[in-house]
Image (cartoon, rainbow, N blue to C red; front, side, top):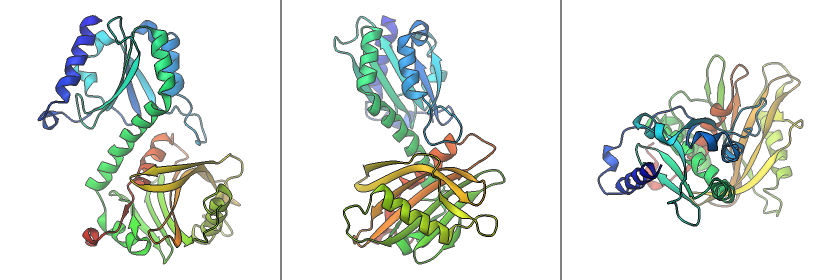
Length: 333
């Protein structure tokens, strides 16, 4: 174990040297999957339970039970080149030569790119558990951001640029839409962009309404009130007298977040079709336009009744985070 710890330390140092980034291979592994490097005894004990409780807990706001991430345990002695190029790695090093104070390090592109590595150093399993507990939110956010960044990079690489150009002409900004997405509807205050296949539907809606300056403008009640009214007018169901709305059978969550300098209110919940039996998860970002006189909502939802929905939702939600404001340099998208 001492030898493995030394090799890992050297590898991390070399990965930080100039000129190595261009030599890195592409990452392997499935989206939503994490390699957890840990001794078998720890994996089957309290330390492994702590990691599973954090990273394989039930993914929220899905109709059926799905884990947040799919975990694969690899023992340190079996951590060969095949696993080193995986997209997400959590390496838990329990060793007497670890620092006296357990710590968690966060690294990118150590053995492959774009890769994220969470390294936990501790002298005992108990100390490792304490470190993971204290850094739990940061660990999840780091991996989630890495998954999101990969989707955004692919969106920009395979972008259908004419859609973003049309959307930003109306809203002053737009997400980046990858190939496969089509513009279904565009008005002066509503856009509907979707990747529709035989059994799956991943959709982005962008809409706006006047800002009033009220203190509760971005409260959950106000956001849902506007959402239901706008979707009733713009997103009909398959049959007469049916339309999309917010399900009241599931609780909603509201968070105030900041990403790339943009403040927004994030709502998660379930959508349904009034007077019909369709439904699925959604997430929305509500924020002020640059002038401050309108609220813009960028919303992602999934309909995939025959499949697990975790990855479909993660993919389409990531597109929301790719939002860019229109600038003088991107009129020719």
